[in-house]
Image (tube, rainbow over all chains, first blue to last red; front, side, top):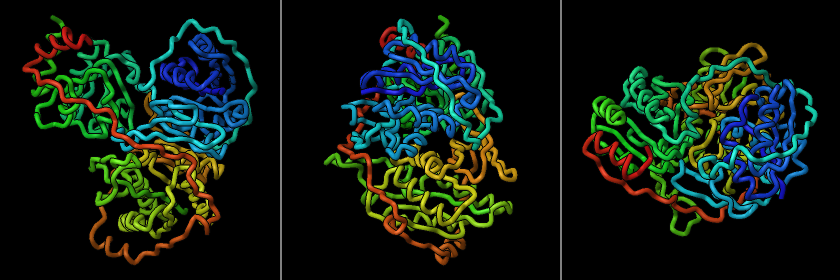
Amino acid sequence: MSVLLVADHDNVEFKSANLNTLSAAGQLGDVTVLVAGSNCRAVADAAAAAEGVSKVLLVDAEIYGHALAENMATLIVGLSGDYTHLVAAATASGKNVLPRVAALLDVAQISDITEIETPDTFVRPIYAGNAMATVQSSDSIKVITVRGTAFEAVASEGGGAPIEEISAGADAGLSNFIGQELSKSERPELTSAKVVISGGRGMQNGENFAMLEKVADQLGAAVGASRAAVDAGYVPNDYQVGQTGKVVAPDLYIAVGISGAIQHLAGMKDSKVIVAINKDEEAPIFQVSDYGLVADLFDAIPEFSAELDK
Amino acid sequence: MKVLVAVKRVIDFNVKVRVKSDQSGVETANVKMSMNPFDEIAVEEGIRLKEAGTASEVIAVSMGQKQSQETIRTALAMGADRGILVETDTELQPLAVAKLLAAIIEKESPDLVILGKQAIDDDSNQTGQMLAALTGRAQGTFVSNLELTGDKVKVTREVDAGLETIELAMPAILTVDLRLNEPRYASLPNIMKAKKKQLDTITPEELGVDASPRLTTLKVVEPSGRDAGVIVENAAELVSKLRNEAKVI
């Protein structure tokens, strides 16, 4: 078995989700990592240093600078002949590119796997994680996205894989990158943070998230949100935790003013310890929380913050 | 400009799904079914393009068993012009759906195809991307804003680090995210009118598409559950438990 892992990166950083995906890929066979980007040598170096990587393929060209699906898919399909499995982290980028690859190869894609039973049989969540399906693929090449929270990350250092430069393909000319608005934060990344504190509709407005940010800084945590808080415009879209947002599984997840709709639980219920702070004692979030505090968050959060300082 | 929207009939988002005791799937008998919420956003966007005078016709397509007609009728009641049902009892997986949509695109030549970014039943998040591949068209996934400019469409995408704007050559395939719009409710008069709108039925065989599944579901089980924990009295007790009992801070 030979696996091609398509790295998720921003030309600078080899995203931590790749390390979890590497651990899944390692269960399938010998792993080659593809780093396609523009001025992305640092990413290839980081990939080569990760544990369990046999080889890194580096394609450095402007047309891959923003991982546009049309150009990425053509490149990956061109390389696919040497592999039994094509995998990527189930991130926005992986989800964008890999189904296009699968369709070009006329094979199914298996999304968001959480377990590998055999090289052709996988477990994946369906219905917002309310059921787990075991599926078997009959296709010659398995195209897979991996749920990072389900696999332990491999070590980011200690490896010494060779880097092979390969040539770029032609620009499909179908899409162009125009610009981006990235949320700037000094805090850890939501999907890899050890502690996450999330706010919901109960926060009432965006300014009140400052209370959570303060606690986040005390705990070295990332800040997340429920869909309701994002839809209401309190915080940007990249804060969203849930079925259709990000899936997190930190050591500690603190849900503040979040009722706990199944769509939100889908994104956080694999956290090791869950804390819920909500003034409604009937809120479904208390059914999954290890520690519940029935209180008005506007009293409870400042108190919690003060206790942390003690 | 012609717009095609794809709509899927799924278990309503408010229903707590139950796994069948024989592990063959989830219980769908006597369960409320609705249009996939992301597809409602796709339909809404199509209709808004028509109301803005940009689109001339909005076609709603669904696939699956006969009951998917209801989902198309919902789209028609919201304001789509006509519907197409690809009727089959075969289990349709994303690749098959993409192939069937590609066959319909061949016939209808829409300038823009809008789909939900994922269906809330299988949570695959694949069909739009696959359709773009099969038709050789540009893809804009997880779209939260779109702007048509001549022969191009500029889309804002929700990505992990924030928002990204890209420009796509038309005709293009778009999959929509939650923040694109707020779908309307169909009014009673429009629900009545929708019953008279054209709804054609076709089969995968007539479209010349092999829709057989590639993945076999071996079993479906309940996820490992979590038990409710304890209720603490105050913030001090909470911090103490997190420090001394859970040892996570």
